Image (cartoon, rainbow, N blue to C red; front, side, top):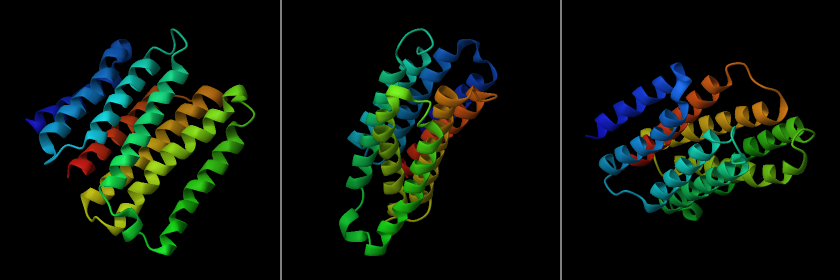
Amino acid sequence: MEWIALGLFGIDLIIHLTWPRHSIITKCLLIPLLTVYYLLAASQAGLFVLLALAACFMGDLLLALSGRSGFFITGLLFFMSGHFLYAVHLLQSTRFLQDLPVWGCLLVLPYLLYLAWLYVRLRRSMGPMLPCFWIYGPAICGMSFLCLTRVFSYAGPAFWLPLLGSILFIASDTMLALHHFRKPLDHADLKIMSTYGLAQLFLILGLAA
């Protein structure tokens, strides 16, 4: 049954990318299908993963409606909550303080460099929303950093898939921010949604492993 849910997720994502006429429906089906897969595939479903998926679903819904009304910021807040909830699960699934060597703190440097680069690109165009950058940016980078530190506790798909998913999440949100605040991207929906869909897929596949 879990592979049926996973197959439906892939079909729904392809339909969303190739036939955007009903994009609200197809986009909002992605997370429920992944949730069904996770519940069926995980030996013990994590509460915070389920809460993160619920927050991301609300983020999808609100961002899908953001062209009609002022739901964009609220949608981002739900996604930020999703990153925090994923982070809590990642902390619970590892012995973070015990397993992380002292030099492992250096793994945060690429994320700091990324935040500095993105800040330079967005600081003049975000206006009064710039403080949101310093909340959302560290939230998603912190979640990805915790995925990276799982290298000291996990191996194989349980490590690589969440890490790859978190990096794709950062890529998707970076393109969304640049598209919304700086300059419209060509084929924005294709680029943003393909990386976002794969990000959620890899995260859930890895966390269910």
